[in-house]
Length: 198
Image (cartoon, rainbow, N blue to C red):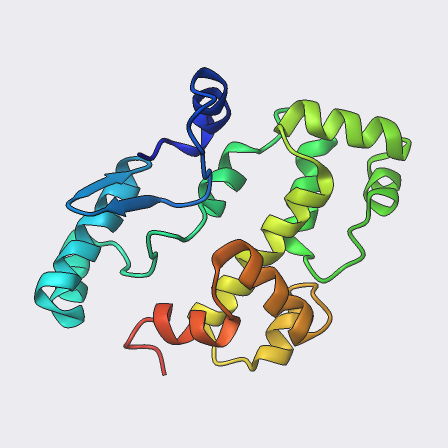
């Protein structure tokens, strides 16, 4: 069974005997498939089309639907989480924008707190209260999302993508990809880069 990422904690609390995995956008268990939201349902449908009729047919269907055939069922829901975790107030919203625009910068709590004009402790507390996550986890998600986009949309080498995304080394990026997505950056690029990109 799947649920929208925003309800994972509630599902786990309400049903303690259930092992809740908050990351997959869809899950298949034998003949039963469930998805974690509307767009995840589209991803699931495209996966079923690809399984039955092949990748080219699934890509054609995706083009007709004006969506991308990129997300596997076990891919975490990072884009949705980032959008939902936008702070309502300044200076935190400005800090989030700066993080997004500068993923390769020093994004430690002390640096971000100084940028916001707050003490590190107050910044971390306020950030979590506004976004529901820690600054470190938010930075991790932004960096992963940035690296994913570069791998999907550019021909930059893995080392360059790692540097530009704030990982420093390809190995650090590889560890982050394996932990979050269950796949290495090179495999991610091979699977999710659009066929028309050269």
